[in-house]
Image (cartoon, rainbow, N blue to C red; front, side, top):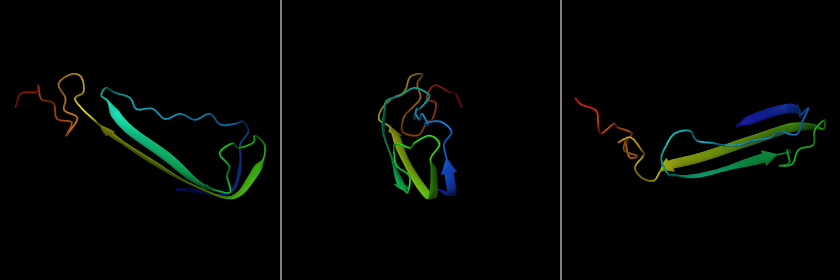
Length: 79
């Protein structure tokens, strides 16, 4: 959670969420904002702002290279 007494953006923010690596994933994210609209205006001051961001992701199958999506253990490694 992030809180700010005063917040101002010099430019309109560009945001992106990405997951590096291999494997098929199911992902979801959301933000809950107080006194901060999703479309902020550059130069406008926002006061007493709160943002809570939640992200969840999970592997849904095998990844390339012999690694298991379940525990991340390398199945090709020798003891």
